[in-house]
Amino acid sequence: MVKRRYPSYPLVGVAGVIIQKGKVLLIKRGKAPGKGEWNIPGGLVEVGERLEEAVKRETYEETGLEVDVGMLLEVSDRIIRDVEGRVMYHYVLLDYLCRMVGGRLAAASDAADARWVSFEDIDSLDLPKSVRNVLRKAGKREGGYE
Image (cartoon, rainbow, N blue to C red; front, side, top):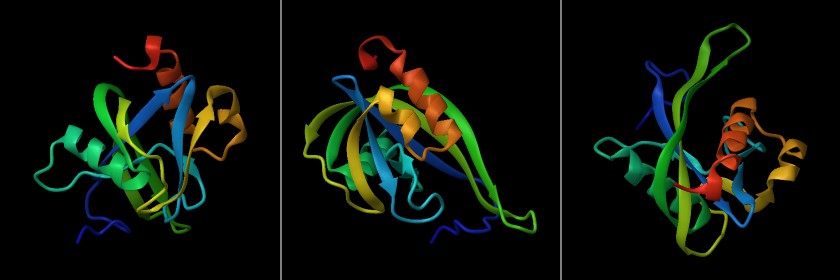
């Protein structure tokens, strides 16, 4: 079992930015860290799993959607410290542009909700700053997928 809280080393996570008809798919996190925040579907890479496979698996587990994985949009880190300054969570995150190819949207796994959101409505949601930046970058891509 991976130790997420107070880890001994950074954990690798992936996420799939899915754009369709001018909207992006977001999930509301059902667990810490970020419980209640809107975010991009994703999660941790499992041992022996390729990054593309992890994006497909995590997206399907959280949303019920099947995706093709495109270009890498962003590499970032998310470090959350406790009140004493100790590292409570540390993730290295890889965000990929994806295209939906099947499935039916339904929040599942650790997602409390999943919905398509217009780019105009992104600023009204409780999103981490790093997620806003990734979504802006994705929104500028011609056609939403390459």
